[in-house]
Length: 115
Length: 110
Image (cartoon, rainbow over all chains, first blue to last red; front, side, top):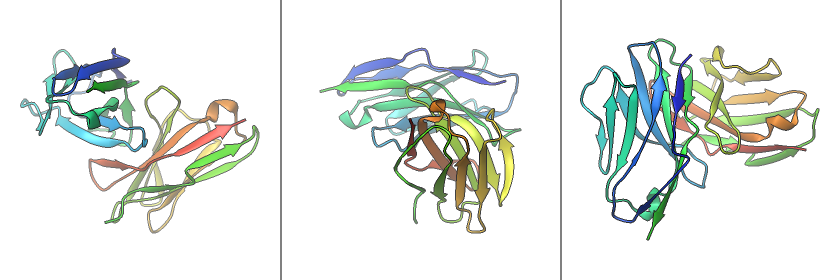
């Protein structure tokens, strides 16, 4: 079964600085999708960025980018120029291409942004 | 375009009772997934409905059941509530790959 591990329960970053959140996953599949979701105190999960496993190029969305290392099964999120509004829980998630009704989430990383 | 909505926002029940949670999908989305998020943990997949049929289930007992209606809105029913059922319940609707989440229902079982 696929598992997702986020080894950093909490992280903090100074406003305008860069922070990287770690995520590793375990799968025997070759085709899948990886996601980073943000969950602010309002509780609504918001998609931050998505990576298709068949794409070698790392996904980028404005200040958010990923470092996808397929062989190492690693999928880290880099937030550049951190803003106070980035403070939230961040969840890494895995979704199979073969069984796309089951999304597996990590335990989350709580990000604090210091002014 | 209306986003995913859930009702109620909060709910308190006692052990042994039954509860129904509701989810309205984003317009045009024919798939709804339900997740349970215990405090301090990531969401866990309960089940998914596609065009009114269950389309996959996670490791949850049969007392967790669901429905999807012709307008693609959905219900999650939990019978014989246990203390461990206390959690945030999230629904997410999708048309293809991306899931759009609702704000969740916070269920407390006393």
